[in-house]
Image (cartoon, rainbow over all chains, first blue to last red):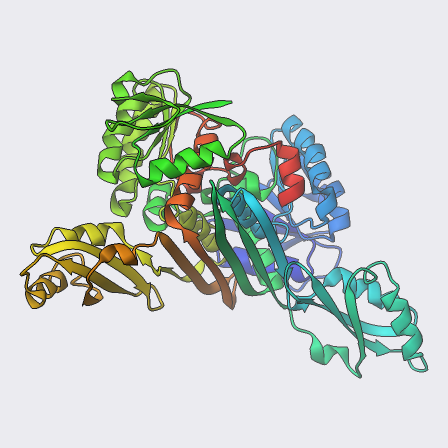
Length: 291
Length: 291
């Protein structure tokens, strides 16, 4: 059995708990959370108390992940995370790679669905069709980052920013807002449209009475590549999904926790991991079933 | 530069030639073919003459591949192939793994699109959605094996067997036949319907005057998985493509030729290879572009 800990117990942490419960080869030893949890697992208040596990599954907000990962790796505990700040991933990988190698353990970063499994699909499509364009179309689904940005605007009591795909990698933002009493919708709307998060996309702002009635963690992606294999044009490949977002992220993290225990010391993204390493079971049987 | 040879120069061999021409990091040193070729590459009559290459790309019929691969690996030449007899792949891998390790080289087998890239997608879907059913729907496209089986039936001058997907992994066979003069269509039709290749599938036999007018190497796949991530049901993922069959197979072989040079000695299927190894370019840049 792989001995695992969950670090951070929000939406993703709960989904990781469920995915570990459904796995045959991973045991949950600890949850690290500053909150009181009504759960039948040993709860530690701080990562400094964590010891005696093979892998820590990091479910903290992305911006906190690099520091937590470095701290655990420096104690020789392997980590996986779903760090999703695309522009920083390569640099975080370089930093954690050094720490992991120095302490004889391993990390898999950006192990969610995008970045994560979508990245693997993009790599595979590039191997199949080296010239051409890949479009990644997200949604319809809630964008956490955009929602948080709207909530920070004065006059907004609650908000929900939906990402709507309009094709060829272009997206519309549908922003639903519940206003504080006396707030001016026109003013709030203008602040949203001029916010850095929204200024580059087509954005519609809609006023609603109760945001809670709109919340749904369903999400999706439609990834398309059209291009050239060898010298032959018009090769078309498409990958689509309709999924519960935290459930898929939690599952990918748990499959990655399995994979990280099979890697040599270092830090990896999912495109650097043999796909079979994410799976439970006998290698020969997996090859017979899947290949 | 990776020094490569093409072994066998039929449809797939030609596509490999094109894919190597379009690559930046692979040079074609030899073609091994018993035929006379009007081509600006050194042609060798037999694999026994082959030497001084990093990888041989095997484009011979599948049933000949295991022996050719073993022979080249025993000389220390790495190989890739698109061996497609699904039920034998695991056993061929075990045999070639031993030869490769003894001779300090590597092989990637079953590196086409199914088996091959579809296998990688099936592995990825299993990591994302561990419980559920994957359906692989092929076509519409020509089945080589079924076409050969029809051509062997007395009275058939030429034939084409198309695979038509009817959903949930079930297929219809549309068999087009051009008859020898005086052949009895009813009799030929009965022989086809009772042939081992067709007896398990819905099959329609259609008589045409000229098979050549029907030939098209376009093919496709629609791979669907619906199942459970963690404890959350109704996760739906789909992978589809519409492709020129030999062009894609040739490209996957060439990407695999690149990957095989990066592996430790042994024999691998594509699900055992880190996806980034199939790609040309700087690792850090690939991570920035794809992850």
